[in-house]
Amino acid sequence: MELGAILVAVGAFLVGFVALRAAGNARRAADEAKEDARRRTDAVLGQVENRLTETRRLLALVASGAKLDREQILEGRLWREIDAREAQALVAAGSVRVLDVRNPNETAFGIIPGAQILPVDALEERHREVARTGKPLLVYCAAGARSAAACEFLSAQGYDELINLAGGFQSWTGPRAKPGA
Image (cartoon, rainbow, N blue to C red; front, top):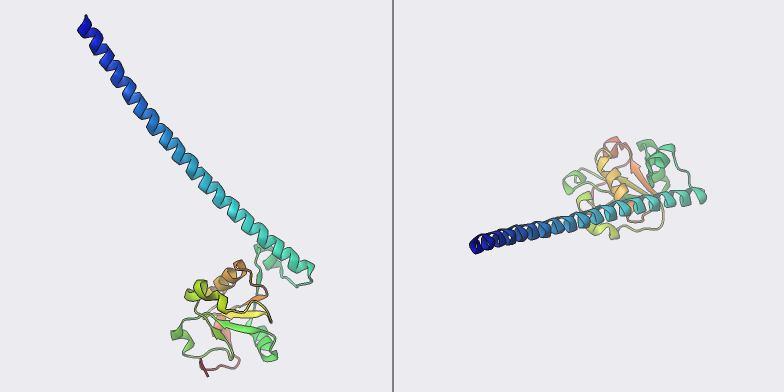
């Protein structure tokens, strides 16, 4: 009888031990899930705050009399796109600064005269080399996609008056220069 009681006690102890370990594992899993939910919530809140900041900047531009196109407002873009004809007029009038975000292999065949060259791949580390003030900044790449991404990045860094050359350097029929010339 004593042996039976001891076996029942040992069995109860083992069941209790297993239950305790399971409870500990469940608690760790719950703590991890809670931490994951907190991280996700923080990430979403950060995204909402970024979008709210962009919307405020758009509203500030409108309030200051800036001319925004419909797409900028609907897409929440702080930069606009223009075609090569309009870009050539702005460059010819000296109304814009120019930023070429193509790589050196591409710029070797020519750039828009006076363009600052800063490859899009280096933009994150070197964007401070681009002046924030002065004239609007016309940004271009080969076809317009990388320069649009560059405009998006620069606007997120607080740059204003950004213009993407739709069609990129491929669409440019104005004067061309050799880099460093």
